[in-house]
View 1 (cartoon, helix red, strand yellow):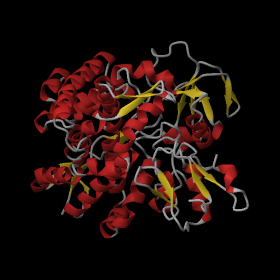
View 2 (cartoon, helix red, strand yellow):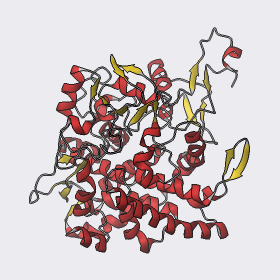
View 3 (cartoon, rainbow over the protein chains, first blue to last red):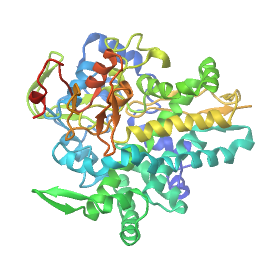
View 4 (cartoon, rainbow over the protein chains, first blue to last red):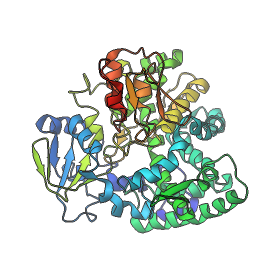
Length: 422
Length: 74
């Protein structure tokens, strides 16, 4: 299928779509970055260059910072230092690079106090009560997906299952009509950071904004139990005065949410399934003991997460990390995946071991920009694995299909999850 | 809350829940989605220290039992 055909088709989670939107960030060019990361870490905690140049992959962000010195952290301590010290390592550096996706309101591209102001607006959606708002859409969707292919006896779970539910859950929580799901899914794909050319991403954002403006208007008239209804009544403090949130701000927050939660969760699930299917004994154990599912999910996110790098930071002053002088104006990439395999923090770090009782990892970052949706993502991953184990006994790789591999640099994903069961 | 050895800075807490996952018998999420300290914290000390360190925004302070609470409550 060529690009036009994908657009016409909607391209929901199909392989072509996946390749198109991820090849710019290293998919198909780097499969296993970890041996190289371990060698780099053994050498020094921070290195010159971006992860793209370090791995010899064309850098889709090069034009954003043409003159900046680039650095990449690979150890836990130094990565954590960069993520926690948001005064020295500002998020403002990515505002320009992400503007076409996020628009004028940027949680990821703002520092406190502006960041905190907008974050506190969406925070209640991710607390304990907020979790139910998302959760109500998860299990029914997963069950109906399995119903749709259970009779076939084989499936590529990455495209038939993993890719078909996180965007659905976001869409339903936003109040998107189910008949527009394919269209919405396609926009979400184009709005992932650095995944599509800027003009395509910008067009997708405009389309989402136009669509969601209609939903906002409807919810103002008739509120429901959804995210837009929750947001329309909230107030923002401006110069000491509380004023009601504007439509532009609501649209901005929605456009922040979509790229953050669309691809990350389903890629994690795909990587998780490939990892488990490669370990039949662990699969057997999972069928018998569901209590270990959350630990399996957390260990997967440490060991081989969907994002190699947290959003790059801009050094606001001359500083030093790991003995290297970082001049003001430099761009520093926090290497969270490399940090999560730092032997100074994790014993035998290259081993996938759900029983390690892992300490907190940097999978969801840390500092003020800690992933707002972490609890939703965990809930979705735990539920999706449990539903598979409930419904499909004796899951194993399809021997008639090529063995999948995990690929990608900035974003990581499996090439597929072909399975049979029973 | 005056007896607690832990102070939660409500202005900082972002409900990341790292502490709840690391030391679930010590920390929980309150009704307003801000972390609370449970009445009888009884996680292993090692896990409680990990939980404090794991807070992305340093919202948890441990007060030495011998220290005057007032000093930390400002």
